[in-house]
Length: 262
Image (cartoon, rainbow, N blue to C red; front, side, top):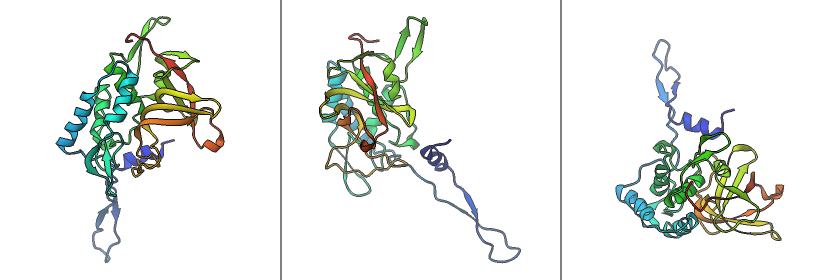
């Protein structure tokens, strides 16, 4: 079954002719068209804004991927000078409403997964953010499988792929990968860096990209069906979700990557 968003994105590139009612017998029918549907965040931003996005990424320093994500959450939380359709400022650490956020798109480019401009910022970007932080510390996205004696092609922009990257652990430490799977769509999920957990409160804090905004932030971007204008930072997940939590994400596990690049 084609998902609603995929259908809309496909249909958005078409101009569908409609037959208008003829004004009189024997007269040719007038052709009209449905306006093209445009995804949010699909307009190319001004050159100076694109440069700023790149400068933000270039300014970051760290010893670990977790360091880079921590810095990214802070340094990227600056206004871009662009407004959304409601007149609100759009900082670099969130998906944008009208323009494509160059910082997000640059991370996709850097990890080797170039995004089409007509996709805007609607592409899920949690894994790309993690992949970018890993790449900055020299980690590779190809693993050697000793049992099968062949390379496994690793896709850094697919969240559930990260469950195959490191060694699964039961005693997570800050900086370990926390990988989630969407039980309604098993090929999709979420990934970020473990911060802390509280079993008594049934909470798990994850640092990453494309996470829900904290209270007080403005939610305006709808990417084809209820996807909010998510940001880079910390988010608290239910450790063991119940139906009252209204989430389809379930924790697969915690993964500790090698101290040396793969």
